Length: 89
Length: 171
Image (cartoon, rainbow over all chains, first blue to last red; front, side, top):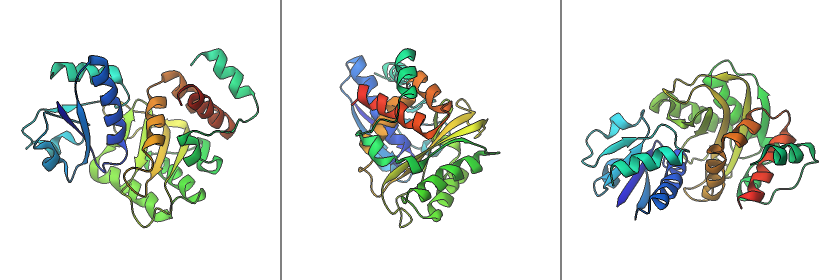
């Protein structure tokens, strides 16, 4: 499963989200490849993704993406991310 | 982390840190009990520490504020915790982080993670040099006890000792 973690710059919050998404996928025994994208390149990166993770503020910017866009409230909560991943597994 | 461990370490003399976060977060980049009346002042405090530590020029601080103005308070990635940052630019002199605790929690306008008590500033030269340090920040931010210890630390040494202790347990 290819997952794209999107934030504004692609250097800060999305890296935290990527790391914790990898931990959550590992916990679920899910085979996941997680990439980081900034809001400018997210549309391209998301075109081949199975799932897009981002914040509530940025989700509206990704409305044209065909993959499901899932909002994560707490980027440091592996519990929350795991729950949302398992819903889309 | 156990309370007893934390009590012990924070009462001891400063211990040196060798982890990836310690290397990018010098004592000059840390301020505790900062008074900020709004989110802009809170982000500016984190930016001022980056400037003081020689990581950035003041223009980067303005850029961090502009990110929130343009894209919203998404930098509040966890309850009470904001990761202030902007794009790599000429105003970034070297990759570094700063850490500011607020005397009074400040609202950023985030739907679920307000109010903010801890602001980490991030200045990156590229997209990868800081990722190990960010991994430590991410792990710390998911540990409520560590976040509480940082937010209520009475001194820069207490902040550093909490981080060093955490890095010792989670190398």
